[in-house]
Length: 205
Ligand code: ZN
Image (cartoon, rainbow, N blue to C red; front, side, top):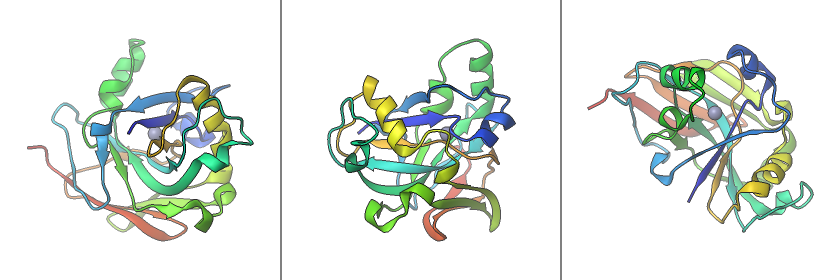
């Protein structure tokens, strides 16, 4: 399994990080070792003092997709959930300023948390709403209709470069409202008001 992630897919989030609105999707990847299942704890890594939450809609690929058109894209998506693209913002800012790749800030163990899957047939993919609460306080909310690049457009762009295989995941970018998490926080990610992801943040060991 590989995890393909999209950066800057919501105008509000690009603005809060002072990033330019891209002409094409910003694509990066996480390894399978980054995956964190529903209801698993997230352990703060010792190499960062600023781990940010990014709640995102996550697609699961159902069939092999290589150089697909936007029109062909929907048939390759079989399920959707919410996920957290945990980001070591202090490291990322440092790497960005040096013009270096982001992997150390984005691809570490446990950095790709995912919720329980819903079949795409159960979700209005063009206009679905999702949110993140921390300790019962709403922190981020977004809807798929606000994405700069739609799911179908993302699959077109990704599969020009990388073949997607069954079981691969696509994190589709975060709306505004990212911020730090602390030990003891309870994070709940919801899709259409249904809580699908529930994790606790624990101290590094
Ligand atoms: Zn992200």
